[in-house]
Structures are given as structure tokens and as C-alpha cells.
Image 1 (cartoon, rainbow, N blue to C red):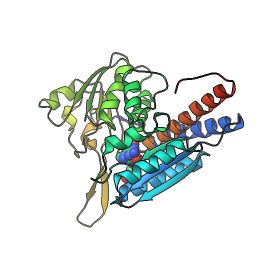
Image 2 (cartoon, rainbow, N blue to C red):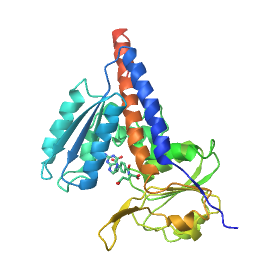
Image 3 (cartoon, rainbow, N blue to C red):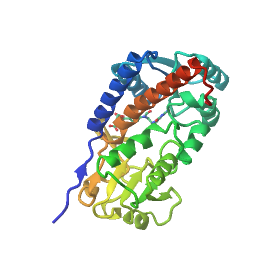
Image 4 (spheres, protein in one colour):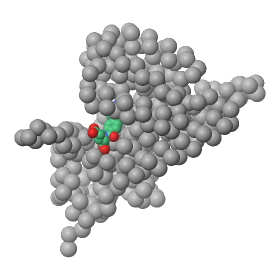
Amino acid sequence: MPMSARIIDGRALAAEVRNEVAKGVAALVAGGAAVPELAVVLIGDDPASHVYVSNKVRQTEAVGMRSRRFVLAADTPERLLLDLIEQLNRDPAVSGILVQFPLPPQIDAARVVTAIRPDKDVDGFNPLNVGRTAAGMEGALVPCTPLGILRLIKSVHDDIAGFGALVVGASNVVGRPMARLLLQEMCTVSIAHVRTTDLERRCREADILVVATGVPGLIRGHFIKPGATVIDVGITRIKSGSGAERLVGDVAFDEAIEVAGAITPVPGGVGPMTIACLLANTLGAARMEAARSKAKEANVTTAV
Ligand SMILES: Nc1nc2c(c(=O)[nH]1)N[C@@H](CN(C=O)c1ccc(C(=O)N[C@@H](CCC(=O)O)C(=O)O)cc1)CN2
């Protein structure tokens, strides 16, 4: 008899996270701290990025935080962006800073993420946070999409220690930090990528399969281990003959649902968790700042 996987509802889980953040913000402010504030910087005209940034600003305000949005022209020189980041780094009202990706070609992403102060780096892309996450250190700001994915997985399994996990995709935004988080949970982790030759065999061994390649339908139903938890990070817009647009993931959903134990849909899976976890990181950054200020007031020296 064909199985039908449990569909993991990212929208419902994201609403839970936003609720928790709203309560956390209220408690922080009631304790005398300033209202947390997120600064979002967008360069260029990418329509999807504009939608994501608008959603970030709207959701930030909905949980009781402040937001500032900076929209720069596509041909903005890198120096100007770095100057803006420096200004935001120094501004005590700003708890979190993020620069929306993708960036135009004249801007070097590594220089940008390195310029953001690590304790305001709510995307978790600064090398210090990358290193802290890799080392499993307390106080690291962890990239939002992997953080959201871990929460989606934990909504299915309380304890994933000993699970075999395969992450397909090795980007700095998703694949690499995801693998580090799964390792932290004591999964046995492998990473596959565009040059992996035996992808199908490796997928079939995975109890947890996270796919972030941007290749629509790459993972077919017969790649999946029966009962596995499948997380689809891909979002590709496909235009039909009539001009209507639909979103598809990296996993052939209709096939996978017959084999997997649990699966995220596209849309409505990973995407909504990315923004919810950004709010959680902004609150986390504001809490750390409030703790540092209290310690300073008490004349105790703390290391940043
Ligand atoms: N600085 C960053 N840039 C980018 C990140 C990031 O985490 N930090 N991630 C992605 C884009 N992104 C957030 O920025 C993002 C992508 C998708 C969604 C989402 O909710 N998707 C919906 C579908 C919405 C649609 O496109 O119609 C879903 O999957 O249900 C939210 C945020 C790259 N850039």
C-alpha cells in the first residue's frame, strides 16, 4: 500500500515562533531595555528580494520591534554600502543588521558580511559567527534558514542523535551551516553538491534529507529512503504557457510524498521559517546587548 508522508506545515510553525518572539520582546522592554530594532539593506531591483524585505519589515513590526529599511540603487559602489554598515554598527539603537542577498556584481559578499558587527549580524554570516556555529559555541548568531529547518525537523523528531543526514548543497547561506547544526545534534552528516557523482545512492541512505540546490525536481521519489524526513529548501518560479507563475522545489513532491515519512511543501515549508528565525535572532541580539549594558552598569567587564 503506498504511504503518504506527513506534510510539515512551515507557516504554522513560523506563526508559533513569531508568537514566542512577540512575548520575548514584550518581556525585554518591560525589563527596561530599548525596543529592538532591525536594519535591512536592499541593493537593486530584484523583485523577489523586494518582497522578502517587505515581509521582513512587516513581520518585525508585527512582533513589536522597530525596523529601518535602506533601498540602494543597483549600481551603488561597495564603499557606500560599507560606510552605511559602519554607521549602523555604531548606532546604539540598532540591534540587528542584514544585507539582502543576492548582491549586484560590483559588491563583494565576503567583505560585506565581514563588515557587519558580529553581535548585530542577525543573518549569522560574519566569519566570527560562522566559526562560533561550527564550534558549537554559545552566543553564536546562526543563519536563519538552517535554524528554521532544525526547528521543522524537531517538530517531527524530538531527538535526532544517530540519524544519518544528507545535506545536498554546500552554500554558505544554507548547506554548510545546516551540516554544522545537524552535526551539533549528533547526526551522522554528509554533504553532497553539484559534483557528487552518486547522489541517488547517498540520498537513499539518509534518514534526514535537506535539499538546497535550486535545481527544480532534482530529487525524485525513488531517491528517498522510505520513512525519511525530507526538507526542500528550493524555490524556483516556473512560468506556465498562460503566463501564470508557480513555485516549485528541488524535490519532486508528488513522488516523494509516497515514500517519505515527513516532507516540507514549497511554498509553505522552509521559506516562512527563514523570516520567523530572523526575528528570533534579532531578539537574541537585543537580549545580548541588554545583558552587556546591565553588566557595564554594574561595572563588570564582559568580552564581546
Ligand atoms: N540576507 C539574506 N538574504 C537571503 C536570505 C537570507 O536568509 N538572508 N534567504 C533567501 C531569501 N529569503 C530571505 O531573505 C526568503 C526566501 C523565501 C521566503 C518565503 O517565505 N518563501 C515562501 C514563498 C514566497 C514567494 O516567493 O512567493 C515560501 O517558501 O512559502 C522567505 C525569505 C535569499 N536571500
